[in-house]
Length: 147
Image (cartoon, rainbow, N blue to C red; front, side):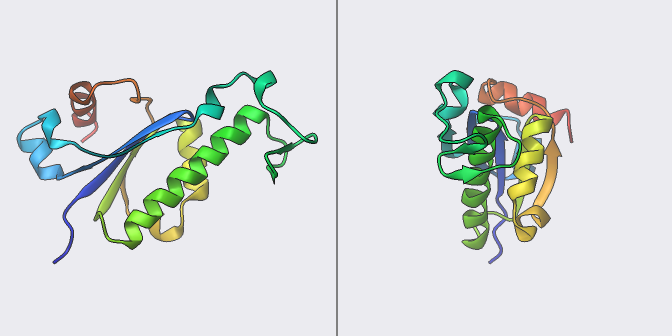
């Protein structure tokens, strides 16, 4: 039987929430109880001030090199990689049929940069907004304005 669930990622460069839902049910009854929290992510290094992020050489942070990136950009990229890997694992294990991604434009670009081709194909909707600080009730209301 094909999975009819949709995963909804609401993220910025410091935090993310991943929900599972049935889109049809959300449209019929916009109730926050219809959102099932799959996982929450917090990337504490993204919250640090630039001078708190340790570098070993110019352009190198924690052993990885991202050409021309600042420490803050580097941490956002590390977090985008973590989220993309997690979602791709869910795709491989068929936990969802399609994916809705909600993120500010700059972070949306980082997520897409690190998504596999297969994961990118599963994205049914992308919304370039920062809804990470909204409650589930506010989130559903905001999402419905995009469909």
